[in-house]
Length: 406
Image (cartoon, helix red, strand yellow):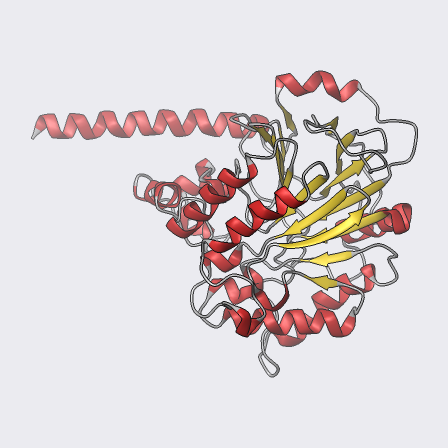
């Protein structure tokens, strides 16, 4: 009995020491930009003096934007749109309306959801370049069985109120869908929520979908990558394939000790030991929106197998509410989900850059073949751009064909 008590005491002491260490580390790095040592030297370099041939704005998770006209990210996005004009493309990476997307008419959340969506559409109205909407898990009613109805309602609303916008893939299909943006530059869009959605989802020609099973879209993506061989390719989906944040299994000390704050931010009920079960479960088994969850894990593995065949490709996602960049086996992975919320992101690991801050990433393609990744973060509610905390040329493996954007 005494041995059991001593073992429990030692276990508690070790856990307390680990939590204390993690807390100190988090306090030191929380909300500060992290740049991996190998990438710090590149921050002193400057992009070409010539204007980019094409620019892409990647902004995700705008669903909780302020509706009083003083939203910092929307105002910053407005500045970017005015600056680039027809030589740019804006891609909204899903979770466009929190908390459950666009509910049916008569639903108590419908009016507020329309208002939040209208605010975004108004900013995008008049932009001369392509506007591409993706859907995320929140747009599918947080993945609930009736989520397909919510998705179709939002798609129809966007098409009605901003006809020039593209909501891709259409009809909630998995994709991929190809959208050429400029000579030698193409965007491929995936509906990653399709693989993890509970309840009805569209299959086959009856819904206008090319895929008839869950594996076929990966073969179609590989075929598209071969079709556009030699061009610059950006693949966009809502769910990240690498992440140092919650959906990648990374949690704060607070979430270990006060796990109920995940449900309500003021639920500070201390549950040490027991509280750690929740983060460990999310990391090992996962909720439906986590990388560890079996359907997500299978989707991720198959996507990685396809993307790794094309070094130099860019995969962009939202989902986690922060800014992250990874370079893995020649492929660039971007997480740009800080459009309206921020959440903890762990420094280090496989990441080249992370920052817990509102904002978005942009990709600048140059005629000489260079590709630059920039952070755009607001300094105030008026959308003044803060000094970029990460601005770097990205390695481009495959040469672009003559006359392309690079």
